[in-house]
Image (cartoon, rainbow, N blue to C red; front, side, top):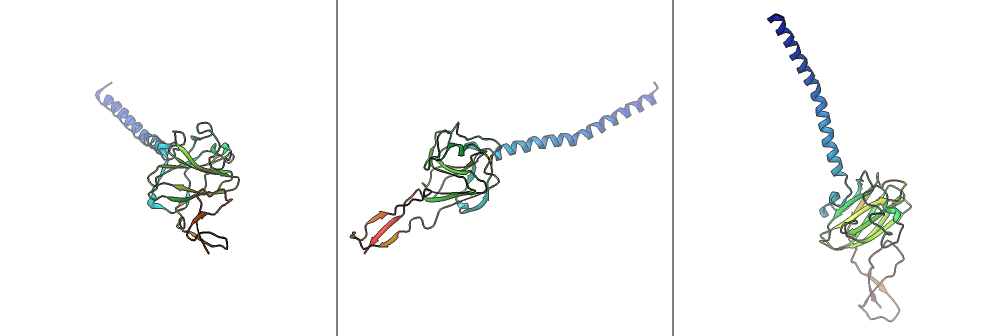
Length: 222
């Protein structure tokens, strides 16, 4: 092969190699971006305690915020055994693909938490990680689409708010939730009673509402 032909052949191979490399670069970019997005998705939707979504107390009140649920049943009745504390509702309410939030209040008081959207939903609030030695504060499950609880929380304590379902449905998502510190939490109720009672003494109003975890103060007067 003479020099001219050899050069032409070499040039043809070079062009082919460059074209092949150029055609592979978009595919490489797509694969790389897919790997990055998968990693971000895993971290964003983790429902283990280290991956829980953090609620900033400054954002309260939270009203009608969309739940972010995990893709797996990380917390369940196997690794967190037992009925829901406070109400004794069935442990099956722990077995959906949950949404988990971390919240450290800066103000002590009775907080209201609720979830709306899916039937057979539940809310649990734990001091510390549910499957890491934490203590259950209160939990409630409901066959309906709306569940609400009022729970006393202490400033500076790290709580985990666990939204879940008793499948089916397999998840509380899509759904909405709220969290607030009621403004009326410590307002006394004045009762004018004909019975003999020392003025200024305090008692409590008995309640049959199972979702109230904190009694109201009562001031008796004549």
